[in-house]
Image (cartoon, rainbow, N blue to C red; front, side, top):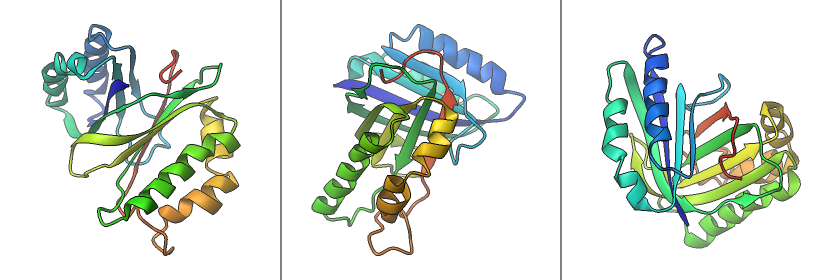
Length: 208
């Protein structure tokens, strides 16, 4: 399985281009198999201003460049960093998407293992019903950056932003099945903290 790193950065507007350029240069020479450094779509929620995603063959690739990325994340103007590391392998369709989306979430620690497993199975089932999802990966988190102890990362490549905001978010599999795990008014709720829903346009494959 590949070793993955995601960082969501809140950056002051005047400093954003310089920070993005520095992160892109680092990503380009990092040796990552796949990389994203892009401004997030304004419809993201708790998703930062810049989305950074790096996919390495193994953990050693990230550890070799981690301190450089941390230094950029500590630059003046960077006001918040949310991040995770995790392992996984994506499921792919033959066509790549034009939008990459990551969802960071925290399952409550008192959740029974069998309930968490059912939740994961329902997330994995979503691409069978939503044909605008072209590639996807569900992973358990190994380490976190920031105040929230995230437990899961659910990533997708979508056909486009409309395919995310329409057929995905409005599909019955989403609002009639999966949403109950997130709804505080539902007895099945296990995700009680705010999620980080972040997405951006991409020119190159991320998961595919």
